[in-house]
Image 1 (cartoon, rainbow, N blue to C red):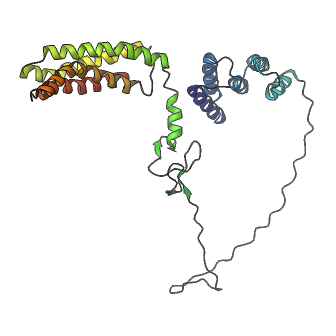
Image 2 (image 1 turned 180 degrees about the vertical axis):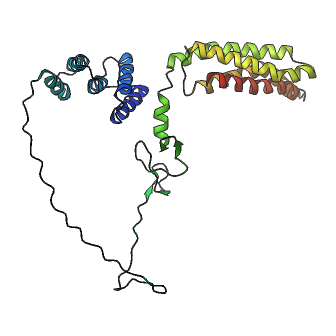
Length: 295
């Protein structure tokens, strides 16, 4: 059973692609899942269904039976490949019953009349659903992928139609392959670099020229830290990795200034606000540059 959220999203995507008839693309996704989870029974069964190679199908079914000897799909598939299934007599297709469609009567409504002829009242049926995320909002729009009712606020326009946020998130999970170890390594490398950069900015600060220069230096330093973080993560992308790196860079930019701010606050010296201005500007610029390097 696949437990990793990313692999489950890959499996659902492979199944949808296989249902649409793109067997080669589905086979590629199934093999990608099996590279990371060799014991995934669902992926082996999917590979057997989409592969056009008999040897690959047989190997996949045998692997499933090794993992789950009582699997009915694998037993039937393997028996079908070996020709052990009994021939099923073709059942003559029953002729469709004759359907008598009654011609609907058309009631004419003349101008000035509120009811059609015959005294019958015309009724218009409206079919509306409630958005699955906002139950108090009525909608007639459904997600193109899963069919859930969605309102205009939740609908995300894509080239194939409107999709719900859950399906968009599942599709994006394929591109986010960073692990918890990557997050830890990036944090361990980014934090000291950010603190060091913030300390150097504080030491060299002073003068109106450097105040203007920080707008360029901050972007350069933040971009460099972001590129280093991306390489530490082995060029893998994570959903929250850019936010973490940007937060660490901003924290490192203002952390060396905290002792000066504390002293100024205790002594009542108003100059500590000016001291915090330059590191604050640097932290915002550097964090933005690092965010877009890791994104």
